[in-house]
Image (tube, rainbow over all chains, first blue to last red; front, side):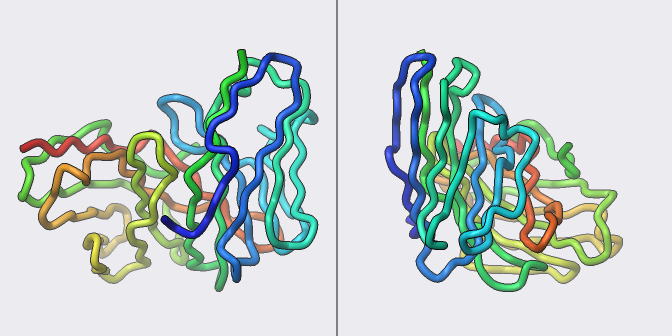
Length: 115
Length: 113
């Protein structure tokens, strides 16, 4: 257990529905990252927060995706109008300290299945 | 694109050392090499990182060549629980601090009794 928690662990939804995932980072960590992992592939970077500010978004993050970290603590990732291609494991990671050698600690992930 | 190259798979007998190689020929002078592993259906687990000196912790040792173009992760006494996908990562700097981990497909290590 790294101290990063994610909820829910599993989500099954129908195409077109909205889903929201939550990530609680390690309490003193100011950076929070979201990644997506599809079957057989390594995780891919989606977006990044430093405190409450969203500083970077990958081109993978389409307009249907939105992420927030309102008080610089927990974060939510929402997917609107889900598509079957959104089926994946969504991973959250947090870190602190000097950027040059920060260590990101991952949560257990939320596995999404879109039917 | 991943900035590292790893073998797709490796086998190791339980109790023996597992040596996992990684090539990172385009690494720049101030970039660290990180190793993570992912056991089936879990989030990636941090193992170790290094810049140019060899590093050791309770999980593994990291040997980096003098030219820094390759490295080897060593699990000194592999157990069945070490069966996982091992990722060698050179990070990408993001705007305004922070870094993204660029994962390749990693090496699937299978430890057998």
